[in-house]
Length: 120
Image (cartoon, one colour):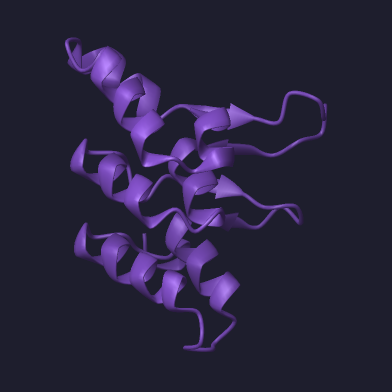
């Protein structure tokens, strides 16, 4: 999932989801896995959805939420702060409404009841 997130291709994500859709447990394990940067021992451990959110891959995030990904998965950023994917959207926006992709991402996540960490 991490490699798919790097490229952000919904078609590849769809194939991956279809390959595990026969087993609901495996599907949930796959989309809610915590992915760690392999080449960095001190690397971030982040949920699959966060990689797609960081990349601004709205269509891929739509696929994940349609498959019941945990939109409120908590993880830490570089400084140790606990966040959710919605926090990342707001961080990228930086209080500006100029980023249409992140505005769309925020609306999508909120539609599926995503919250910032402080509101969990």
